Every structure is written in C-alpha cells, then in structure tokens.
Amino acid sequence: MELQGTFTVARPRSQVWAALNDPDVLRGAIPGCDTLTGDGYDARVALKIGPVKAHFSGRITIAETVPEDRLVLTGEGNGGVAGFAKGGATVTLADLGEGTEVAYLAEVAIGGKLAQLGSRLIESTSRKLAAEFFDRLNEALSRIAEPTP
Image 1 (cartoon, rainbow, N blue to C red):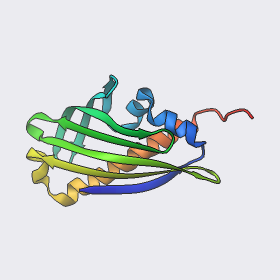
Image 2: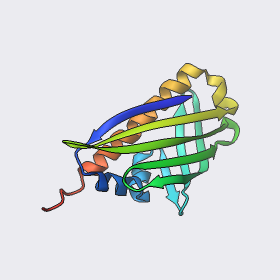
Image 3: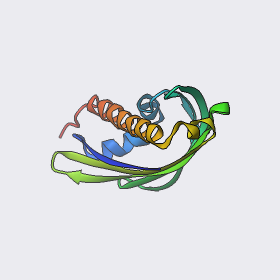
C-alpha cells in the first residue's frame, strides 16, 4: 500500500530537519509510541486497527539522508499474533514563502491477522495514522521559539 501527502510548517527548513532527526520529537509524534531509542531507532508502538489491538516492537533505520533536503527511512515491526508491518518512507523538504513544505511517500506491507481485516480498513487507518503523525509533528514544531534575527 502506498501513502503520500504534504503539509506546511511555518518554520525554517533547518528546524524541521532537526525535529525529524530528534527521537524525543518523533516519540511524541508517532501515534501509540511509548519507546523510541537508539541510533537506528528501536520502537514500541501500541495500535488499534479495527477490532485488533496490537503492540508492535520493531526497528526504524535511516537508510539515506541529504541534510535539510531528504530523509529515507525503512522499518519493520512485529505485533505477535496480530501480524507484522514493514515498509519505508521518503520525506522531502522544500522552502516555501511561509515556511517549509514537507512531502512524504511511504510504502507499507502488512501480514498476519492484520492483513485479514481488509484493505479498505487498513488503508483508511494507515492514512489516519499518517495524518496524526504529521499533525503532531506540526504541533511540536509550532512550540519551537522563532529564531531571533
């Protein structure tokens, strides 16, 4: 399944880049995330997708970076009997007059019990979770003080 979207942050690209590389900011932005540690990031996330509640443990790896321009992530998580998820995402930043445009393109594959829920439910939940992540990231960035000239 492919997910894509864009949003605008009223902050300079350097601040958005720093936030995308800050484990504390990411932990607060990832829906259901209670642990995010390490250089590559070991993560624990609790999610409810339709009737299935699952705790995923997994790893997010930064596969490629072009500072303040593009970040490529890969990851996989195991939710026990609920199934697994794996995929990757490319996040790109571009200057806009009012701040920074953040665009993302993600590929996600799931298996196990989750895959039996149906593609419509999985896709709508994935889109909702992606939107929630970027809303939370935007909120975190809005709390950063404006740089002084």
